[in-house]
Length: 398
Ligand code: PLP
Ligand code: TYF
Image (cartoon, rainbow, N blue to C red; front, top):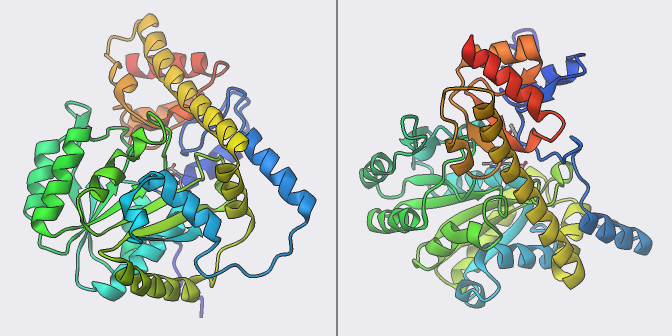
């Protein structure tokens, strides 16, 4: 039965990591994948996570099945982070949350649920977007198209283009929005622009689906929730997928959540029952460990403070690397103005490096970036940044 199975294309980003791992050069640097590394080039195990895991291990908890929608304490903690602890929506029972296998799992559950209730809707993702957005919604059976987003000339958002495109969409269209720290460009909407997007969604009857994979990586936990809060105040129904992969450095534990904002408590019960049905036919119920650790950290004041400080540390280090990259490229005599790198937010920058320049960086210098010119600033550190700057400068002068 496998004789005619064709080789599938590699994921452009995860495939790059495979190539990086096979590279034997000691000086290699992986600026491809979106992972936060510390100044020693290591994926951190946060002290707050370590403390929660130690406490959990000491109790040696049994490993029964979780509820289909996951741990209640975890889901409540997710809701407080996304919507704010004093949220009226939460008090009114208008939000349901289900623990999911990372942000990816949350998107998949949301996509499958949407396909059941809105089979003929079209899905729109930003141009460009995280590649898996298209793949996830196509595999759920949707037709996926782009809406205008990045403007290469200004290195910012083509907001006029985005807005007028959204205004032309059919009611019921599903719009995937990066809630903060846009992947791959690093270009986010302003608070005022978010409000305009909310207004368009409301006027045109669009279905917003916010993807929040980097809460806390731009300005802070509440500041980065501005889009969620603006939609919350609108009275609209909408979806939020969220992830602790980055903010808790728990990539491999697969800790995320799908939240759905409904019109009423009664509607919430019906929606949750259908989301649970989707989960049952995908993986039945989520694993125990990651959600328990996150819930413990978020609900224990000392651990919560520890985590907030560590998250701020990651955010500040990325920002310092942005500033250092720009300064060092300038000091190296690179004529091109890279100051936009400091304005971009989150882990990524669309550098403007061409696919050919990215090839030279990899082949000649062992520096791996995505072919689109996206680099992950969180992979830079005080030890590798000079080599990266030298290589980029050499490539730009060639
Ligand atoms: N959404 C975006 C925009 C992302 O960049 C990522 C990155 O991994 C995800 C979702 C998936 O998150 P997770 O790794 O938790 O599945
Ligand atoms: O964009 C990134 O690099 C991260 C990690 O299929 C990632 O979001 C990349 C590709 C993928 C899953 C995760």
